[in-house]
Amino acid sequence: MTATPGENRTVFREQMDEVRSEIVHLAGLVAEAIPRATSALLDSDLDAARRLVEGDDVLDVLTLQIEDHCYHLLALQSPMASDLRAVIVALRLASEIERCGDLAVNIAKAARRLYGVELESRLRGLIERMSRSAVRLFRLAVDAYADGDEGRAAALDDLDDELDDLHRSFIAAIFEAHHTSGVDLRVAVQLALIGRFYERLGDHAVNVGERVQYMVTGWLPEHAGAARAVARDQVESHAEETIDLGEFGDSNGSTNGSGSGPD
Image (cartoon, rainbow, N blue to C red; front, side, top):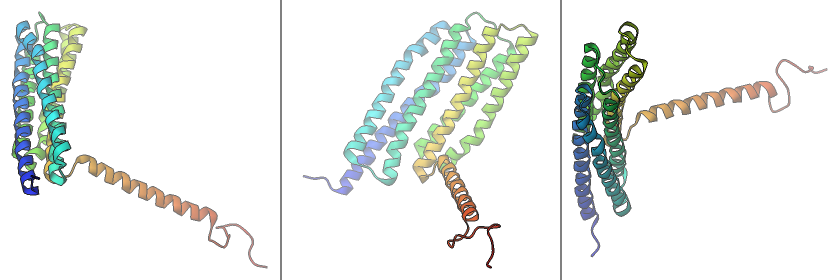
């Protein structure tokens, strides 16, 4: 017996609820990994760093399962409009969240490269603050997705300013430590990379927020840029047409400012 449209939609919603739960589960693992990576770094805990690096395989498996689930929905349910956006956003979010897991692993790997290095208290403090800010942004982004909260998602861009400020302060502190305390250049480079990892975590959280807005409203920041590009093209096209008319005159073959008058 062929399922009715209503039955198909019920099945789709149930499966999308499963996908949403899978994404929230994946995000929960990543949200735990970020502070664990920070602790491994600050405590020079090589065993904790190793467990985080090995645990990345689990995140990869979960990400692939989510993607397969989404492809299955696209193939069998043929969703349209808001349902299609929900599946597309789920695919994008799985990738964004998995990348955040990779960044946490990068921090853990940096902990191994900096093993035995004693960090100044200011640098340690900034790392802790960047970690807390990144986790907060990440959790807010995932909560916005789980609740379909457009307002919370839109606020993430402004909230990311705090992490950006901390990142700038951290880079400045690295330069100062290098010049005043003789911090080795190799160590300084590793610290700069670590700061970048935290900053990128905030960027991915903002990306998640933008995709949530798209899921709810159908709007993306890229749409505004595309509209500006079209408007510029129209202005340039109009200007070129005006120049062409000025150069070649009217259809009778006369030109502006040249040629002889009637006898």
